[in-house]
Image (cartoon, rainbow, N blue to C red; front, top):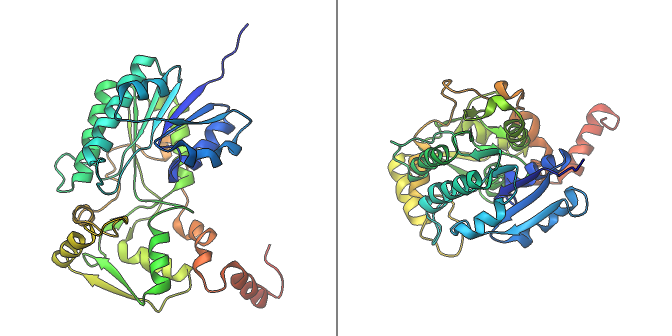
Length: 330
């Protein structure tokens, strides 16, 4: 009797979500191909599995032949590719529509048994945001090419390498003022990256996840202002002033910042449009519960990685706890 290892190809696997997912797939026994534009950036993940189990793989998602090589003989294909802003030649259409459609079509042709496509909460064909419109178009293209695909729509994702809490915590180190786009009233259901990675693995392994769309929101809902207050509390900088910025001024500011060359923009006009709509679950689709997962709240997770923004860092908080309890916490 012969035995063949299961193969999982993860597009965008070297990114924030991917590095947490790769470890779980390796632990589950998969041979993992990390399909990325710059495969050398995924070399650090090789140690997450046995020798030869995790393989960085150079892929151009704009090319059929390149994608076909990456999905050949794969049992599972996961697409994590996404962009928060456009930078030539990577338009939203290229990243959110064309690439997912190509991956789904070629995965189906290659005989992959499962495809999980990570989209975003708020994806909508009628949105004023190009990000949200193309996310919705990408979902439609994936399901047209691979009807049994699972679509996951997470709210904003947080974790050790996130670009949300880390970005604003870094700003709070330098600036006495933090801006609240649109007044900070937009609502979110933040999702921990570990919970999202668990959800992807569950979607891969559960037969009842085939062909379904899941909306993934954390256990609590917060306004943007409340998230900033929580972050400032964790990093012990409650004195920072939260400045409401009206929508019209936010749009102007986004138009200026998106034109700054050579750096990732802090804000774009499209992101302002995206923030005008709440990023919470509709209740019309299944969520974490149906995948057998109980998500963690930000209050539990943020202190585990934002401590580095506290003056004195972990050493400072340890000393404080010793003084309070007259013993080392444990």
